[in-house]
Image (cartoon, helix red, strand yellow):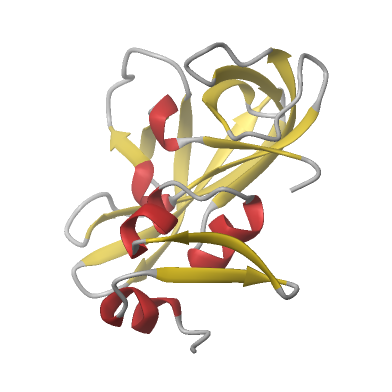
Length: 171
């Protein structure tokens, strides 16, 4: 038994994540980290960018859904508890899911941001990016190789729909 996610992931063949005395998810470490069943499991297993929104288009058979958020429309993967259009949800994507470029990429889930802070983490840096939408600032945290992107540089941020999880508000 441990509360150290890194230790658990390194030592365990199978993880059991408990939430208030109940089993929230069972699986191999990479499955629990990469495909969490609930927002609790996602945040327990590691850091993420959380954004609240409302379902704009109900999930289809492939579980993809469109969500209206303060950052604009975001396409993500609905977890089982996501309701239909108008349902309140929380989206989460990991810092390492951010694709950073100096030119605007094609596709959904794209924002322009400015590096506000760099934190050295060994082989990589954690970037705090400020994204302004409709005159309001928002923060996205991303990871990048340690010798990339200086402070004050403008970057394009893209998060592929497969790496955005959409959780219903009851989770």
